Image (cartoon, rainbow, N blue to C red; front, side, top):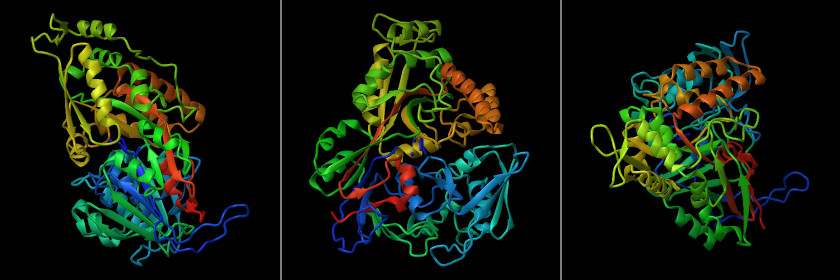
Length: 537
């Protein structure tokens, strides 16, 4: 999501593996840049079998790392973290902010040779994203859109219900345009297995040439791609769920690129003379989500008490080896202009947590456990997915809560099973997860009331005051006006805790010395795959 992406959910362990069998050809780049091998193969890792359709309900981090290489969006991320041209070359909003017009590229071909037109964009959003019978996992991101229409074969208009200044950013956020000529006539787009699980057809820089379920996905450079041709010929994604396997491989020389999300794995890599380490920052925060359909979590005092009971700095030291900072809300410090650090905070204070729970009607008895007015113990089931450091962090949080008398049981699930149960079905009580969000302060899809059941508001928090602030933020265009609104939003969230914000992590790219990738968030880096290259030395 975050990216979950809990998009999103989008934080990722990626491993890019050896360049075995690379042919010796080389090309010269710009003056002063070393020659590169145009036939290089990069092999990376994803944690599970992907879905080749990021709009699908079960497509998350395992697919996020692959699909942007096969598909294009209306916009994409530039290296500066801002929306940049992709299938659209330019865009503008009407004076009232209710219609955004995008000029599309001419001459683009789908990877099966069919022509791309505005009809593909219209069909993607009107018939797939907004399919009421079979809704997309990201439909809530685009709730401000009334309809999408073509005003010519290469012009498309997004007609809004209310002004939305962040639309170009969200169109860059894991939002692939899909081929109408393949999906038309299929009432349920997720049932089209021949596309979603076997043979995807996009307009992106790479074509899927082979998929062996449970083993690997091979992408080959798309010779008809409309943008700059990638300097990498082939990318192979091995399906490897275990991070330790990736570390072992990079140390043995079988892997040459690794995005490390667990700093505990970094120590052995940072001193290796054959490797280079990049430090990158991203719009990412980790948190505990409490399912607010559970009555005992609806009392804000309970949420605040459970937050006070977590030693966030201790968690950062234990899990991140100090490479992170305490989170205060959904807008990370990376967004310097909009980030508000002057909000209510919850420093580690177990005694204060117990007192707050006592005001909420709980009693700590001689056995050290908390009991409710009904005489039953205060219990929480913590659900954790097997990915990155989610499980060890969940174990620490379990210990913190048990210290104040909460009875906590930990339920660990395989990643895809976790996505199905917790993310899709919202069947959980508490879970430690993360969100990698767009580089914009607009977080409406993650916290709005209308996203509580079918969108990314997994905690099911609903507050009309918060909704009103987020709508105002969407309508505002001037940066100063937006900042004032989003500061109020952050202050309200810090008090109400729709999520228990824990920390903003740091990330590290570890790579062989002949592998060169932009020193930016991986999600931005793959949108700029043309800037990746492998030298001959």
